[in-house]
Image 1 (cartoon, one colour):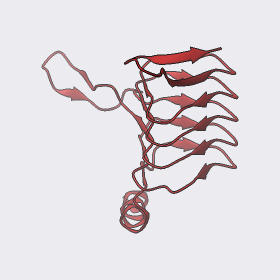
Image 2 (cartoon, rainbow, N blue to C red):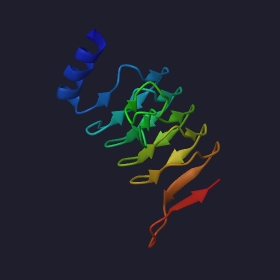
Image 3 (cartoon, rainbow, N blue to C red):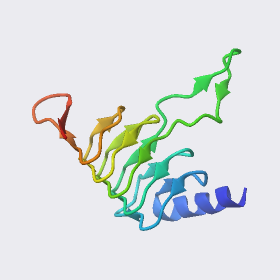
Image 4 (cartoon, helix red, strand yellow):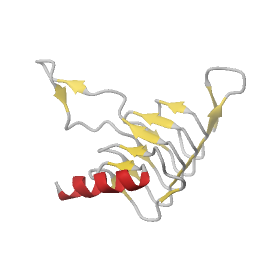
Amino acid sequence: MVARIIAEIAHSATGIDIHPGAQIASSFFIDHGTGVVIGETAVIGQRVRLYQAVTLGAKRFDKDEKGALVKDSVRHPIVENDVVIYAGATILGRITIGHASTIGGNVWLTHSVPPYSHITQAAGSSGAKHSF
């Protein structure tokens, strides 16, 4: 409860919403953090940089046999070491962003990418451009 209260105070002062259950390693950096959202089961490695309005969120909640939401399942991304995620990127689901990858601004990503990937919006199209 105390962690959640501190998170709410920090969110109101910074515009950054980090769930207290997220696992974040050392040397984590958020630049111009307004609008950054990091979900409960997100795992963030060392030397990760995020820019404004990045979401590390869930794609959906699983439901039990009665249709009730199951909230104890892992549902947020894993971001490995030395990753840069630029402004406005949305990364959803339990996917892995491989180490030393770069995710460009305004990219919507719902699948894992291997280490050393460079993901950007493809110019003039609706899909992301992958460079591995």
